[in-house]
Image (cartoon, rainbow, N blue to C red; front, side):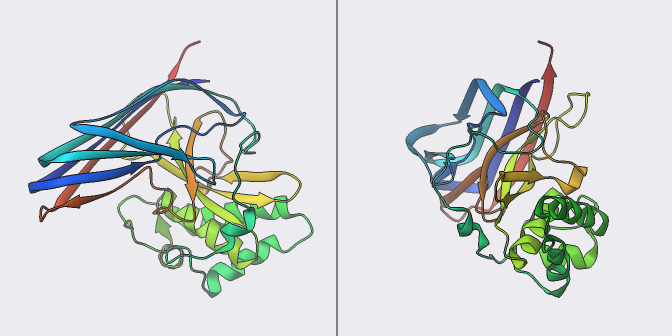
Length: 268
């Protein structure tokens, strides 16, 4: 599939700030399931700084925006050719060992309910257990935008039975780690329908490490493994660690955020 992305993030400050520094994970991952055709990231009033490829294989790019500034637009536009690898992250180069993703974070701290779900991974067939875990989380956490927030934990989302893709991913990760299985958070895009309309945010899912196969993606929000409709950007221990844009501002202005994402299928 040939997918076109138009991702706009608008930051507004109620009073001008003296400057902003940002770190971006906005470049598509390099692996067998996707080929970059063209990609462009612009930051209004921004100066591109240094960049590097981290241990997880993600490209991290620095930007600085000199103040005073009251509004910043980060725009991502590009095309990626994708193929369906049944969720397997094949051909991806990274040096961070899988066991590094056993460490819990505040968002992925397990409780008794998540540990019970993690027991699904303790059978002889780990891959089948991963599919069962993803399906169980789909059943236990109904997709319901607006019922959770950026700091909702996996345990809280499971307890209330509602959430969004971030909560589904955190729940998979927390349950897997409770069973001693490495898991991580993945940020990216999803071509969800044929309308071409903009979405409110980008997408997220989880990857679980299965020995003999490697990292495999699971998306409980859509009851599937990532396929050709997905574009992978980067990964981390949780949503905060894998955030496509992270930054800090200098000043007293309160920040507000507006995000739109449009992912369209192009005829080849």
